[in-house]
Amino acid sequence: MGFDLVLAAVPGGGYVSTLKVIPALLVLAVWARLLTWADKDAPAAHLPRIKFNLANVSGMMLAYALFFYLPTFWLSFAALLVVAGAESGVYLTVRRKEVGLDDLEKQFKLWLKSFKGKKETKSEAGKVQVFSKDNKPLPVPEEESPDRVAYDAVQKSLTEPLQKGTQQIDIAPEGEGLTVKYVVDNFPYRGAELDRTAGAAAISYLKWAAGLAVEDKRKPQTGTLKVNLDGTKTEMRMQTAGNTAGEYMRLLVDPKKRQDYTIDTLGLTDAQKTLLTSLIKENTDGVVLVSAPKGHGLTSLFYGILKAHDAFLQHIQTIERDQEQDLEGITQNKLPPGATGAEELKLVDWVISQEPDILGISKVEDAKSAAALIAYGKAGKRAYVCLRASSTFEALEQWRKLVGDNRLATEALKLVINGRVLRRLCLACKEAFNPDPAVLRKLNLNPEKVTTLYRAREATLRDQKGQPVLCQFCQEMRYKGRTGAFELLVVDDEIRAAVEAGRPLAQAFRKQRGRYLQEELLALVEKGDTSVQEVQRVLKVAGDGGAGTTAPSAPQGRPAAPSAAKRPAAT
Image (cartoon, rainbow, N blue to C red; front, side, top):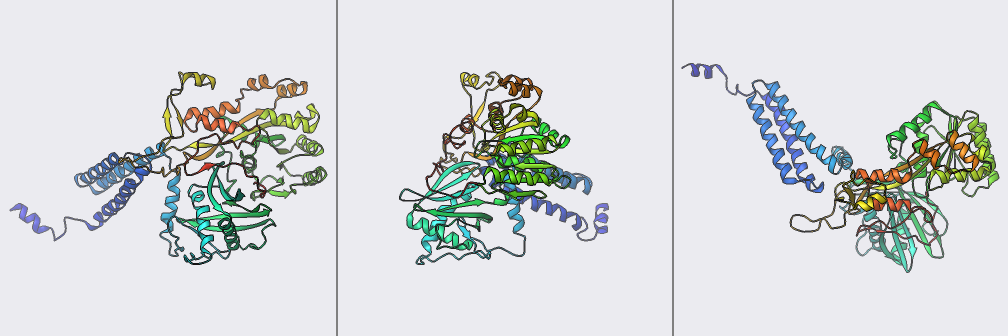
């Protein structure tokens, strides 16, 4: 009787609040979409798919059980959000530890693009779409079209490098044809082989798209090319030149972003960042030598240090023979690559006469220019001088010889920096192994402390059925991403006295608790960031500028050998 009265007092549908159901359904829709994404992402990220699926579905069921069990809506809805957030957080935390989260940024941007009203012309999956100079996609030639040979050669040349995240692509004459070589994370790989006809057609096709003179195959030309591959639009700076061997093309990928490094992203240790930041912020006088071998990020290091200064509060100028990027708020003065010592000195004196607070110079060849920079540093200003050297000691020796006077060379000197660029092991597919204690001792690593190291994967990845699969994170390169290792030499009174007396610097360097470059590199090995083989490669810089090819290469991209063909200057 009483129950019937309660039912009669409640109108139809009164037991369910539509306003309260809608938020729960929205959470369910979003949650289900995330579970679908995780189900597809787990195999690519080398995570246990079935375990995560069971855990994620169980968590959802628990959350909605709590939602209907708890007494009030706000408490139950809060429980729903907490469980959903915890579940997502656990998955992303595990994923970050195993393979990182950097690739999710690209996925997120593509997802946002899908909501835009204006849709870009889509290219065929896995095919490179080339844009004309007026930013219109070029049509795909028919099979019988004369342009089809060039189009197919472009696909063969650019697809693999772009899929693997290249920074530079070269198409150059070699032997009886043309060879594609590309660089990923500062490491050279060999790509496709083209016959003479197809290679020349590909270069002409890309030159035409960039608006360059196709008929002129000798004169150096520079242009801009835009391409699209699987939804990612890429801008490239094109450089072409030719000689009797044939025409050569270099494509620099995302040239405006090539040097987007700061002292926080270069790879400096916390102690090194503290030292360098202190030198930048607390003192603005003296000379700092910035050094690295060829191909090891000297420009990135140079620009990164300059950008650490406040360009809006300080007057900063540079003198560069080959300017690679426009630096906001910094006046960049260009010096021709073949400038004489007198021309260099003239520009140095002129820039100093402008009284900048900071002056950076990419290369010094004239002793009088060096003396002018020293005088500038002694006058309460800061000068950054770039040198090609394999250690801080070698850089200091080069500077000493250039200046010609030991005391003068170190009088205004504050710091010497030397660096290397090396590849990071792919987090998704790197292999752990137990190193030989004898080998560890040779590397000055403690066998009792270091029990596990990592190396590039040697075997092919296989799925549960034994079928070979590609690592989606490194595209079978075995390495993914780059970092830096640096050696810093503080020029104090003991270093100055040792240089002036011609004594070895090792004792004074150790006294200031300096760490050699090899020690910094092996610290990255110990952390599992890179391999012993990669460290050995980047330390081989005596004769080849660090471009050794001893590291194992992926089946899809072989280390590139130097080419004898004449080419535009490297950047």
